[in-house]
Length: 245
Image 1 (cartoon, rainbow, N blue to C red):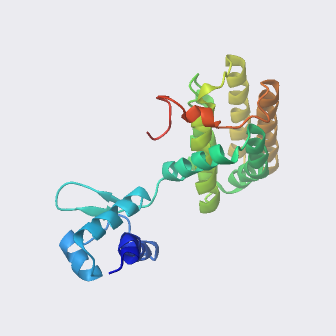
Image 2 (cartoon, rainbow, N blue to C red):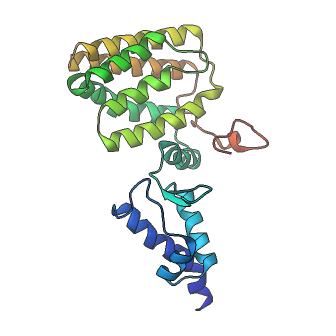
Image 3 (cartoon, one colour):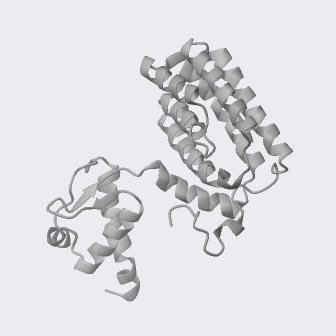
């Protein structure tokens, strides 16, 4: 085997296994064959197979456990998508204004959809989170938005906005959010939840738009509208608040 082919061997083995996972041939919870069997099946060296499995693990497609189960299949979690998103937001210089413009395109429509189609349990869960309010560390704010998007039942919307919310959760950690701001946001959440509980799509959409407009005013007043969500400086030094260290 040439040096070039040898260097690509782990990628080729990972691609073979990745296709089996993404095609549904291997489902979450299934175990891969033992390492010796994979070596025989794939015609690759033991080290190549190990490197390929490390690639799949980094992508969130497999997990390795001690014992007889070995390497098991799983689906990537939103946190892994958010990890890549945080890096892209840093490198592209996406601003808080960009974020709010993006959210205003999607979340009011999502709120209207949820008001019309959500289950009774989903409506109750949204109302419960809204009633609890928002803690100083942001607990309650992100949960409300994540629940609402999940209740939409749209996997594309859920995946994208769940990753965005994870990124925002970290990016907003250094912002100075006052008690007044938290109380106002919690009040908006309750109004949105009420419209959803009452199956009123138009009012739910309107209330969500008002909620995001208020967030825009807060960002403007803070002088952050054109500021990057995650400036490169957040990655410097020994910052212990870095995500996914």
